[in-house]
Length: 76
Image (cartoon, rainbow, N blue to C red; front, side):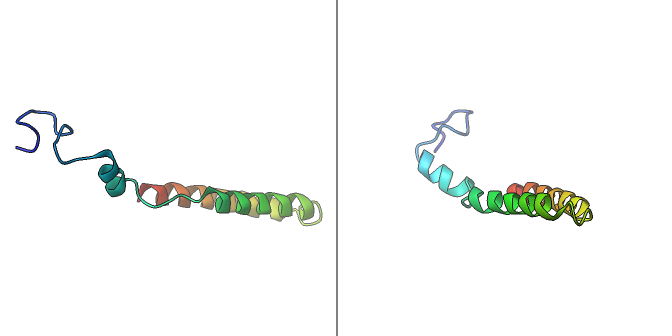
């Protein structure tokens, strides 16, 4: 009855765009925190990587872990 006796489930009398966004949008994605951590790792690696070459594979591993974790967390 709410779908006005039609086949399209998105045409309803009760659903508004604000209610839809509230239910399905999820939390706020704070980009500035993630960007600052990436810039910090790049800066420290470029600054001290010449003296300690071990920092380059560690930074690469960190970027890979951050990428996988962000992709995983954005799905939930």
